[in-house]
Amino acid sequence: MSVIKIKQTRSAIKRPADQKATIKALGFKRLNHVIEKENTPQIMGMINKVKHLIQIID
Image (cartoon, rainbow, N blue to C red; front, side, top):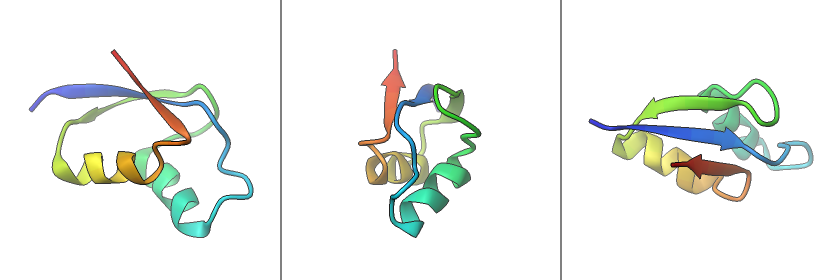
């Protein structure tokens, strides 16, 4: 599988609990934190759920 880089660009403050949990499950610690994840259907579903809070880096 390929690896994708994801950056958290917006805060999870004042967001629903499920979105906060998804950000935490992806492994984000703070704003502008960049992580690398395998491109699996599970990860893509998590990304889709919080796509308004993150950015996929090429």
